[in-house]
Length: 417
Image (cartoon, rainbow, N blue to C red; front, side):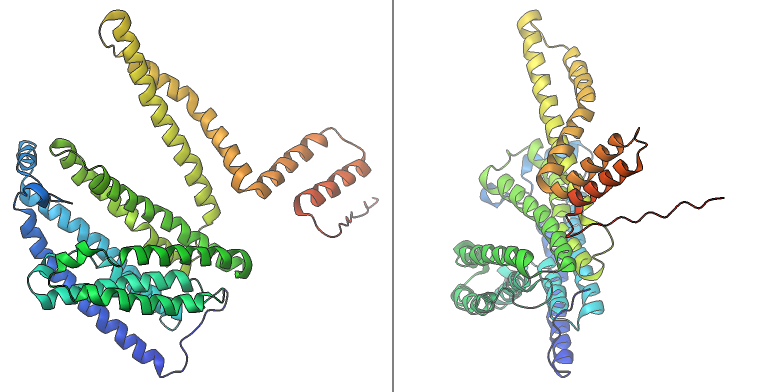
């Protein structure tokens, strides 16, 4: 494993660990104190603009009761989901702290997971200015630690060189930007001000640029595998966040049964996506050799594309065939669903092979060329009996796939009986 930066001096490590414990204990206490209040608020039907996130309107509560589910069960499910996601992130952060707190990146990653996993827009922040300031401080520390993590990952060093100034600028700008917002009277006004959102997005974009430069010019093989793990998890988390923005901000789902079902099933799926980055981050720091991430990425790309294509073709063919049946017979027919299902079953394997080839050519060209060369070699020497021609083909294969500076082949002389 590549060398990582450690905390300078033996006196700094105990102090850093004590500070970590204090911050996390305060955050855990704040998190647990808010859960019962959040549960009680979910028991009250929302009205108008209050119907955001997991709250249910009166008509949605009626539908829920018709399904035989009480509002108490729904509230417990939502609070349990929130607590579960927070518990996963906290547990991963604690595990990294116990295993790698002597390293800068281990200490920072564990703090980021423990704070960010237990952060949110909590109801107790509305009850007093002191609690609002506490909530804002904890959330701000969580954001700063996440941003700094992306600048220093995977070895705790500021690489490339310009990231040293970026790290100092992140800390200074966060203080200057968030301090005026923290002086606002209520927590809600701080949330609605959004003064630091654009700054955070800018710093995260610069951090991704730094990671790209580090990956191409400064990372060794181990660090590149670690970076792949984190980027894979980041893609899942970003997808979950974009879906949340789409369904709650840009195109909010209509109230009633659709929104109720989305709050039950959709939010659970988004919660699972949000845990992707913490899980892959922990793997990359603790057990980055556990799985071959290239295989995971490859299969995700292939089967993700196949799934999207199959669903699109299926629903498109059902709609088209139903329209055709209505035009011809004047009514819909179940034959449209049967025909669409048979068509998709017949196209699944060809689609999978097509996407597999495309992914191999686009992202894993070297592996694809090597596999193709081996296949060509095996076919060319299948009926060959001339040993010299087989040697020439084998040397040519090694030169084509591995491109070494020189190639030599040694064959053991056959022994005479």
